[in-house]
Length: 510
Image (cartoon, rainbow, N blue to C red; front, side, top):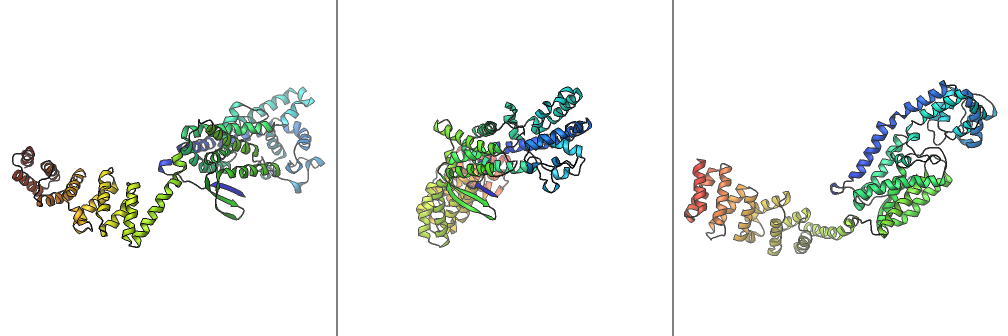
């Protein structure tokens, strides 16, 4: 077992791979709403083959064809006789592309033969060239019916067959799978590479390149093969994503996860260095292993995906989301500064913490961690400059849960705060009053108004703010507060429009 996959990024709410999710859903639906019925289609074709008497006509012909065209290790005895063509029972092996042959050995010889013939479409030509077949119309008709039923099986109907290529097969084969395990494995890899590329390339370009890689991967196989065994699976297109990934990140150092036999872990390397590793792995499988894995499609997908992205970038027709690609590198200085602030706060080194906090408030004024650390620092450390910047930051940023919570805390704590003198400045109190009114925080706003009123100094918009606060008290049915506000406004600004309106409002509520 040898595996290397990127572990550089993880999806977030801002980078959810919607197109990748859609592709996964389509593949799953195709399998469980269409391909799941292939067992019935196979049984129908096998039953027709047996019931039409074809085993009696084709058994000997198939044995001779199999001896010439199928490797000795891949043959399987149908149990029909004991001559030399039947092979040694101790050497029976499962053909790579025919899963479950062992169970078939317990079936009737005619059924075993029918299933073997079903999976060897290349045998069709040998039958047609047989002289007896050409003279026997009943045989021809039975054969035609069998082939029609076999061709309704999904991988024959919509898979890609190099010896009988179709344009539709180049496309549809990437949405078919051999079994649930094949489907699951491909969907896992589609997600791993898909979510990283979808944001970097853009959703529409990502989808187009994915489909193009799938088509080109099968076309690459077509160049090297004229076989009649159909190929299915998304692995060619997914190999294309692997090639795209390397082209997108280039020489950027990427974190990879590896698994080799019992060894696994992480390493960092330039993305482009993985291209010869991945291609070499597929070439090794192609040249030195005997499985049903379509290494040609894997290599074709890798090369196609890589070439498509590299060509698009060279021609400057394929823009990349640079912010996403280099998000971690750009975030590194911030994370380092934040860690330094956290350390200084934890060690009670207030002077150093204040310096780090001031810089972070300048560069990242809306970061929640920065704001909370500044709040914690300023509760016990008097620093007018930092406190002024902190309050301005909270007041200038859009209203949010964090800004509202911290402003409420400042208002509640102002009498016992390390920066008490600044928080009791009339301008600061007035600004906090305006924000508490906008947040409809009656108790906080009333407390601030009383503090301002006690200073007995003229303030801008004092009548207007008192009117707004009085209406808020009336809406919350705080009669005592409404009376206090109305009487103060009438006493200080008896001829103002605000005093008349608030008096009328109080009278109307009664």
